[in-house]
Image: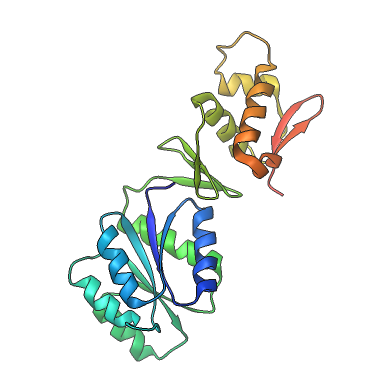
Length: 225
């Protein structure tokens, strides 16, 4: 699981699930709250690891504005408000309280993810570089792999092989080329060792193992379908 945690606050269960599914595909950890009071409780318990909050405005018990005010008393964590299309005056009011950005409902989940990533890069430049290959998220600094939000244990060679295939998406790679680039010319044994590593990787990444295609007489190709 990524060490980047996002708190998603919305009283609509389906909305929370939609946001959660898309963010987990990018490797983010997710915490949830269904109302304002729960949001404050979850934030207080996890304030050191929450890197961003997606906060709905209209909620029971405490609305988003009240939650925002209380959080801003002790934290500068980035907050994106999720709103129905409203008045310009409301948005100006929110910026005065410390909102970092607005996203109006209904919104494209892909746009939401892009906004989240942009704010995190701007406010936390030390965060890891993540690359998403069809739900396989590779952390190029930490040398870790997550699939649908779950970290996959891999040997260094398995990691390097998967990354090389993914970086060359759509290209048929011969076994010799794979050996030369992943094993760095220092392997003189049977090239079938690649087949063994591919088998292990496919098993570990589950359903996404289908992305690694066997090209008969050549080698392998990584292709997202």
